[in-house]
Image (cartoon, rainbow, N blue to C red; front, side, top):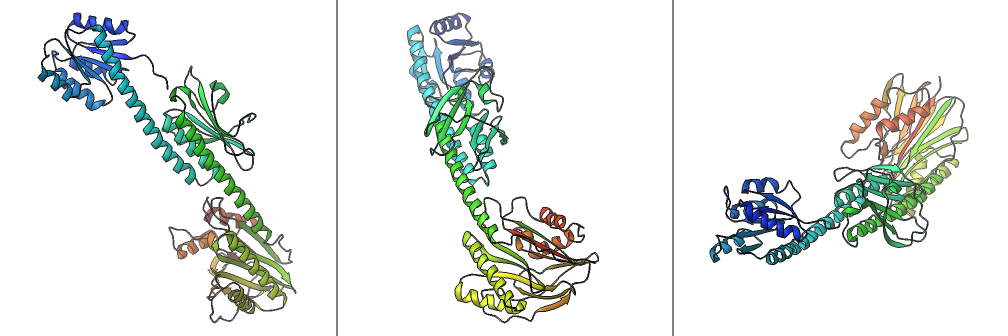
Length: 513
């Protein structure tokens, strides 16, 4: 941020005296403006680009002391020098300095004295303005650092970074980075009031060293936003690791201080947040891949039955959970199960895998649903004593539609028949606790009916009760699509939030007419 020509406002009602002051200041390289009265001076300050006011004490409308006070009230960083041929005693000088003037010159004034005084007060105020600007920008840097580290995903991180840079430097800004998948994206903000948006952008990373690098470029090379006419852009690149693509922060060059200290810190702070987001995305991808590998790889094809499944892991900013489902034919019966291990972590996902395999193993031994859950519960209490889980499972004979169902604290299945929706209630304690369990629930699934298993991620909300969530599910499932896959997808779209905070599993079974 280079200092431009200094503009001085000369305020005096004497045309001759004003001419002399303007002549001396102009020969010294200052740009000058003139005012004949206090009212005219106050009208110009804050409108015209004024760096210094040379102010006569005695004016026709207002006293110079009052004008100075009003200038300082509105513009504390505006330096004022009093000049006077009449108010020259100690009391006058003391009053002028007390009421805000930075210097007080009594006539006769020598040109050299006026110029030296002007330079002296400007040095102080320029230093003050730089310090205040730096403090303001560092405050903005702190806020931007918090925002980018709190961003829920990579896209929002870049948008927050661009908006923060635009507010810090009070102009357009762009932040360019590469995602974990290798896509190059840019967050851009047109100005300090813009919240930022995301656009694709490609950049040549060749030759950018590890660490921080700053250079000045033609804005046409970064045609992301409308840059100020006739200026250049300053680019700060931050590369934290040799095997990572650098991050770029681009702002107008005229906004920068010598050494670009804040711009470099912005680039480093955002690069650290990007690296953390990349690492989290990578870890989440691995966890989700492992989690999916522990679930059934295919849905069985069974005469007389339609089956559909939807499984959505939690959003990238949330840890994986322990939701699971099972669909497998065993000795002429369909084993259908759904469950949820308490907690959200890779550990919960591994416990989920143990329970799923235990359910399958006990089912293969020929046990009925209640006996399966009893044995799984004993296994958990022995080998996984600190874990809790819910499960609902059934065995269905496809030809007759006969169902044996048992639950362990899981949400009730939804049954749709002839446009009516009911919940199949089978209250029982969850797995992991010692308690008596009720007998299996037996019923016949009528032709044309649809049974829906689901986990709590589909209906639970922080701002709603479970009953409200169940009511929303009942309304959504009042009509079952002919395509069961489309039906499950519609349940997700209409009930699950856009940013899924918990794993969601939906399993639907329809007995054909």
